[in-house]
Length: 359
Image (cartoon, rainbow, N blue to C red; front, side):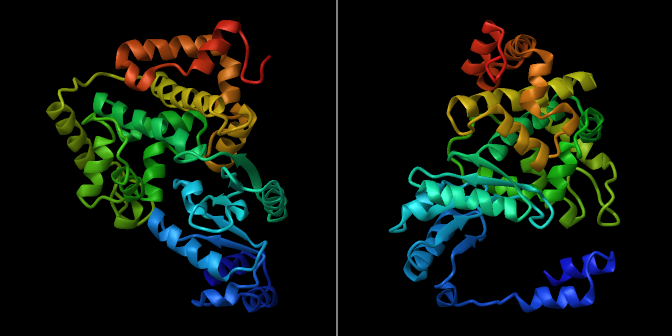
């Protein structure tokens, strides 16, 4: 916190007095009893369900009646967290995006038993904090990270099929993304997704699935923090194309029997964006998101999707859902129904000539 505010002071956004006044309001403790009177507690331990449940058992024991108990989990089952407390109605998700002091998006996760007044309070609090709140339901990864999984899957498939990390990133940055997906993975840390995948038992039985990402982590290439990931970072920050990674990709593709081919930027954009759209349609169908516009809000405020394109769902509507559906059907024929079966909602809207908003 001090480092962040010191940076703001150096840029002239805070005075020394303001910095000291903020620090004076911060109280640090390792004793759960010290937060007994808090109105709201936000848990932010690492992504392990057992660890989070242990924290919530302790919070349940010490926090006053009526306190809101929030989890910053980005993947875990909020209902399973709430279930270890005697007050599941007071448990809610507050999924901040990194860095939390900068990013505007806040996914507000409503559990099966979260009380309406708790939802209303957190939505209002989020706005007071200068955040853009989006109300979502419970599933693995909620809305943003759930949709990011097929997006990342297609990145991995494109690499095996002949694209390079630099080409994929260049295509998506030309489309308008703030950063390409390989660069984003390096920035976040490749081990984050790796650990999340290793903790799951429901992933496809497919040796190609996130194969390159897994290999990079197993070779100690964790991204910027280790100096190497999809790219090399000789100065710690600026990405440099690494021939070793490209050689690794080609070697692994050959081992898996994937014949390399020339892939154009248009296909890269379609594969990645349409994977988002198709999963977004499933999210809507299941009621995890209430409206397509909520998905667009999440992606433009938390995932670097170009605001000028309106978000993945709006962008699909500008192309026409019929055309998007037809292209997804082509991908199904080329790459298999395991990954490219059109979402039923997308199919029905395309046939009816309607958009996600019904028009």
